[in-house]
Length: 80
Figure 1 (tube, rainbow, N blue to C red):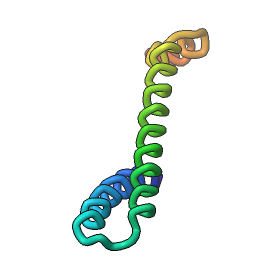
Figure 2: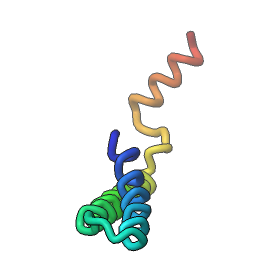
Figure 3: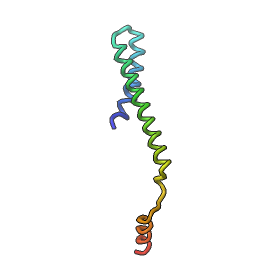
Figure 4: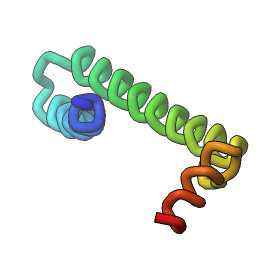
């Protein structure tokens, strides 16, 4: 769950750090670049997994209610 917090934070703070490093000439450009790359890859992975999740459940029709067990349970609800 922490990937939802840390990936965007890494991307944003890496971009901010790169800007400050260019202005001041300090060290750490490689670390800032690593934060941008890791944060971007993690966000891209999350987006891909979300799309796979949506397509998978859209294909299999999770919202449909069918089958003998469901019909029996529905009959018991209305009879009782």
